[in-house]
Length: 154
Image (tube, rainbow, N blue to C red; front, side, top):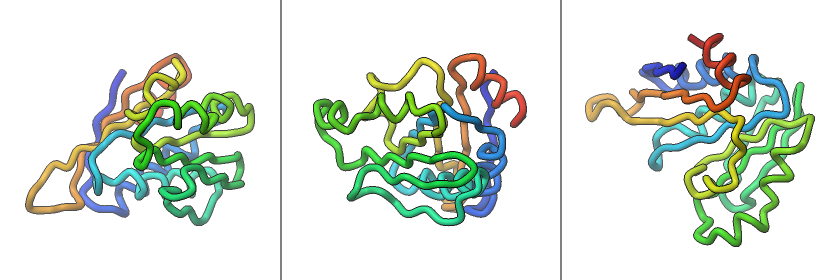
């Protein structure tokens, strides 16, 4: 079961993500896809709040940020990665295996070969030239745990 949700403002995007964050339990991977400015980092702020983390910052230069809340949150940003060897050396698969962590990856298409079979893919699509904050959020589950979470979101 896939789910599409229309968000008309950044605060709605954060609220949707916060609801998702409240449903997640580790280990779990969320892979985010969308163009620059599509709402991925805004989404992560809300998701982090849903698991008890008050503030996140973009890890564009550090690539991976680790936060403590109800669970550990690894926030990975692959935007500046150009080579598959770099992704391998980041140790993504070790993050995915952390039994106490939720891993969220921006620009997940760059690390697609390393993504686990069980995950939630989320696509962001800007939907309006008139309202730059309006976007479709498309949740595509892979595996039974992800399917159950999407069902609860719907």
